[in-house]
Length: 225
Image 1 (cartoon, rainbow, N blue to C red):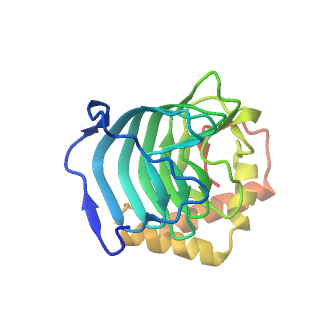
Image 2: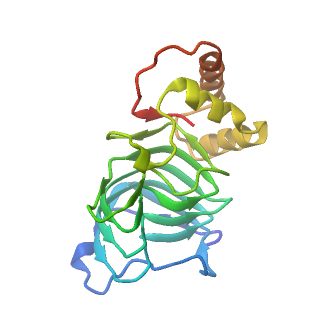
């Protein structure tokens, strides 16, 4: 859906006032995804949704671009709850944030699965007491790129295997292929995110140094991986 189309949000959307709005229950068998460009223009999308079903999200599969959106409110499902169900290999999440309360067997601060690229995502999600597995960003740890992402909160084992110091972050960052980094630069330039190749080069240099000089680094809330 939406391939070749551009959507611009011009005001905050409070979907809690729309009784017919149910979000999306897209699961692993979903046949369709969002392939356009959705620009939230700095506005928020607020929901308050609950289902006895397995999955619940605001966006289903994203194989396009979702940018400049702030997600607020709450999502509750039996198995999976997250703002975006899956970020496909062509999917890009840019300059977004989430301040949601997520409740499910597995609650994800961004998406259940990420196979794409995430640039500048800020998560300050809260997890419901019945959430047995809590992930800062996504339930997947491979095949994805995160650049300049932050999490507000205390990281614990239950949040998944996310790096918490620059030395460990460096190993993950430098493990990405040059193709992956080049793609990130292309995205940054195309969507005018105030980043350029110089920023990537600086990050790469910092990360390379961090793998060589490993000190007793305190756990950091900023995650570059």
